[in-house]
Image 1 (cartoon, rainbow, N blue to C red):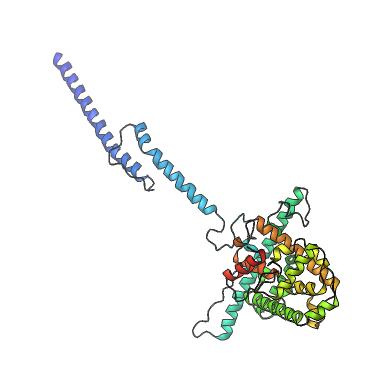
Image 2 (cartoon, rainbow, N blue to C red):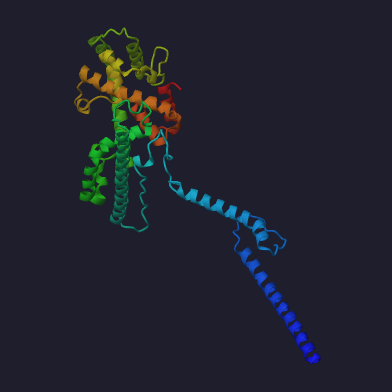
Length: 397
């Protein structure tokens, strides 16, 4: 009996020892697998790996490994999200978001890419491929025009929510930036031009570039090809030179026709600036080198100018009616006073907003050329540095 009890106890102890060894071997087989799995799931973000073995307890492993890995992974994911959310990160945008000085990039015409003629390609086929490129340009330009109109509507809705209307002082009061103010001004004309442009695209298709250069006044600015813009600028600059040449030739006769006495200091300054238009090598004014931006404040001083000085300012700022230019008829004084006064009022407000929202040196190249054209400064054949120099003379900076 005692032998049987002894044998049973020996068997139980042997079984217990065997079961314990079995559990240990299972634990040793599972532990490397879990370690390799955790190391394989680590994100590789440049975190140095520890050569020491992780502690067997779970909390210790979480303290030594997880925080640095989780922090690195979350930071990289946030950086990726921020990079992806930046608008225009992969496009050659003209202006950045929130720019108060330059209007958004969709207010300008898109880039025009004309394909090269392939070897052995038929000329008619090449013209057709060029027409398709132009058609794509016009479709994108129409999209830019619609986006500009939508942006202008959003600005007007914002002003309406604030209980404010659109007037000449809305930008100067700090309610609008120069960028938004310019978008509102330019969208008024494009609102009338867009239906005409859509009809021309549907009617002419790929053959639209053949006639579009003769229809510039009814084409939105976002749909004007570079050759069309250059043709308009060339005509405008040549007309300006012809006007100034005729005025300089008949200066004595024009001065004798209307000798308006100028006792107001603003009128004297503006007259001096007008006389400086005849000599582009010097600053705008003869007396003390007065800059035009300082001389046209206030713009109402143009009402006190003589016919000769009004003609000078009108010739430079393109205030002459085009039909009278073609007929070689001198505009009447009252018409010159109205046109010159309105143009000077616009330039005075624009100069004020340019100074407030960053200065003329921060103007984008496309906006820089536009500002020079509006102020009677030549841009054809001029580099960006030369254009900035000419605009700096306007501001005397």
